[in-house]
Image 1: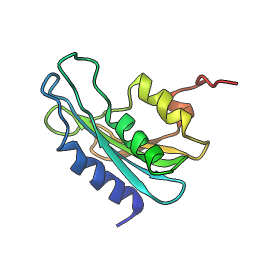
Image 2: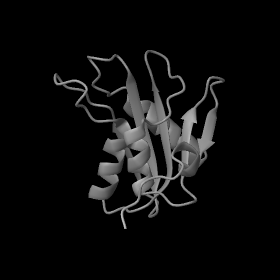
Image 3: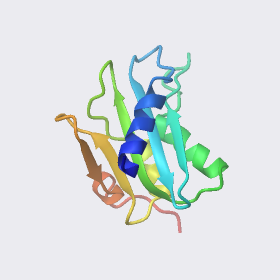
Length: 131
């Protein structure tokens, strides 16, 4: 099984743990960092909806807490019911950009049920950078 397949499997598995009682939309994310470690996260909603946290945010926070610094690949799997195309939201695109480099790949399931690869430049052209 390739690394991409392992990440996809992990994103699909953690998606089952999403706490989404308000939207009914489950998202799982798994990422591989520059040190070869894998981190995962799922979306977590709360009563002050939409003040929840996205799956990508959870995976990135786990990476930073674990001492990682750069995302090599991140896989996002989301949807209501079955998994469907779910690219990261605008906020998550900016979060990914913060920890991405030109080689970072963002994988999402497309409508044909295969994984589509994007760069952060494709999803967030001219992203904001401090300094």
